[in-house]
Image (cartoon, rainbow over all chains, first blue to last red):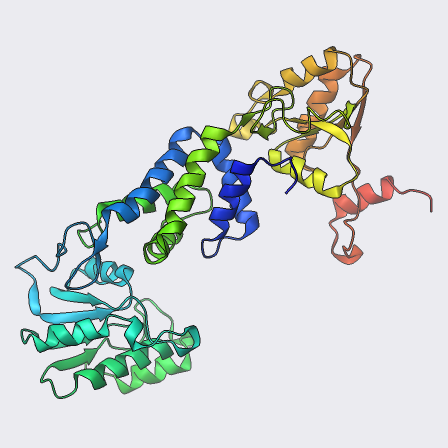
Length: 200
Length: 200
């Protein structure tokens, strides 16, 4: 850019542009907002970014993000350690926690099998999951990967890896979203809802 | 949030949520992206944010953002210092520079008069503009505020403030955007294009 824009400004625009969903236009807009905003805003964000990597690690049991190891859930004796929900991302743990009805523990894969993106089973924490099962305490695995092609393929791979280990493997139910409208539900979801229909 | 999300993570989500156009969902998505991304990404962004405020200031002449004072444009003797383009934001300077046809200097107001947002003339750099005119070197002021209600009101206010100072005051032309389609142009723009029609 021309000398109309000083280097610290272009540097921040470039850094912000590397975030997903943030193009050069949004990055400029955010940068010029921060220039006008009080210093606390940019400095607070700067500190938070530094601390994110400095103060967090992965739990050595479930691979969720945590400050202490093992994480709060894995070290909680009131949780049911015989039940593991296998999820793709730390955000999925948060989603299940918000339901308030799940009392088991978790295993975060950090992705799904996705040949298109070059992600095979070895890039995920599947080996670590098998190791947890082999240790013998686990009775049920709830595969809670996203309901889609890649999530299903990952679930199937996990099922095959754990076959014959005497652990029950379940998958989250498919069906109508609560509050949804039959008219707007896609055909695949509706057919799953039909197959999985329950008695009133 | 529950103990499923450690404090450094929520802290970054909160900090990102304070940016304009970034809601809690986008902030979580960005945070978990940064957790998985290489450290350089979050640390580079952290440094860029710190340097933005530490290494930039406003030019004491035109109030554009700059590293050295006066800025590169104000200290450039090849520019025409008798012509000042008055713009709302530093990004507008960039837009005019990109045209490659403007050789004058700038004056950045840092906003527009906007009673709704509690921004009056005193919140803008209008007094400083008047002072630059009073110093006598300036022959033409091009009011390049945005073509809209607030930009127009600000232009009118500036015109009144500078009346009788013997400086020519112009405004950017309104008309059809190049590459635009007559069919889709709004009526106000089209009527301005009619009023401002030129001979072929």
